[in-house]
Image (cartoon, rainbow, N blue to C red):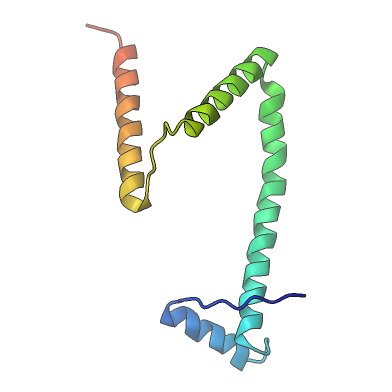
Length: 118
């Protein structure tokens, strides 16, 4: 098995935790602790994907053929827009905050437009 060496930065608390695992004898070295942690993360993601799949299948089963076709068309249009460079990058917390503000603004406008007029 090929091995790739990596340099990582972690907090002092994480470093202390990892060294403690080795010192307690559960692991032979720091790399083994990190490999075990990454392996567990991969297993957890795989488990989450397995659990989500039935829920997604259930949602798809409830859609009509017309709804599925409409979704497919909108997804294809979205991919085409991306290929044309028609998208916005949202970077970091500031970008996500900007995106959230835009979504909230659009939602408020939709709600206001649907509200009965006095």
